[in-house]
Amino acid sequence: MGLFSSDIKTMDDLFIHTLRDIYYAEKQISKSLPKMIDKATNPQLKQGFETHLSETEGHIENLEEAFRLLDVEAKGVDCPAIDGILKEANELIGETEDKQVLDAALIAAAQAVEHYEITRYGTLITWAKELGRNDVAQVLERTLKEEKATDEKLTNLAETRVNLAAAE
Image (tube, rainbow, N blue to C red; front, side):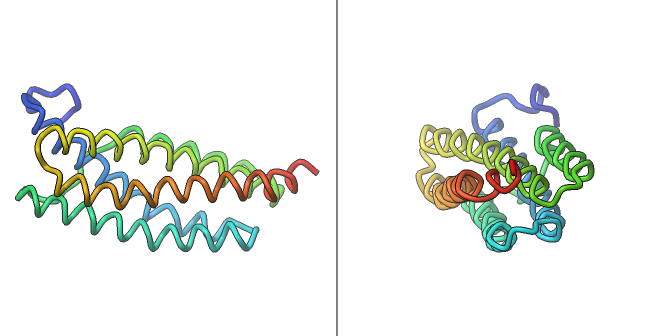
């Protein structure tokens, strides 16, 4: 089902479609994080990615809880946006030889992912509330809080250590 498909006729349809979009995205992210963990050389960055992999598994569980609350099947739909972000990240990582520069590239790639997730979860929370599904909004808010915290940690690590080391 494409975003502008005739299958999307109501706000509920759009909500479910977007929920399935982020479900697919989270699953793709969980597959990509181990490679990022492996490539990271800064110990704090490596640990941050390991922590976020665990959180991402929790985000998938949160989405499955949201699907249960909505009484709809938990399944993903292709998300060209996350596929593109992850493809670009893999290309950038593959082209970077200097280890400090690679860590800076990994942070940039991770933040692109985080910003996509933050926009999706923010939208879904707003729509859930507008559709009278505060129960689902509360589940999604747990994830949004973690996504924002991860983004802040990445920014701090980039600004205080990784970017400085890469620029030397």
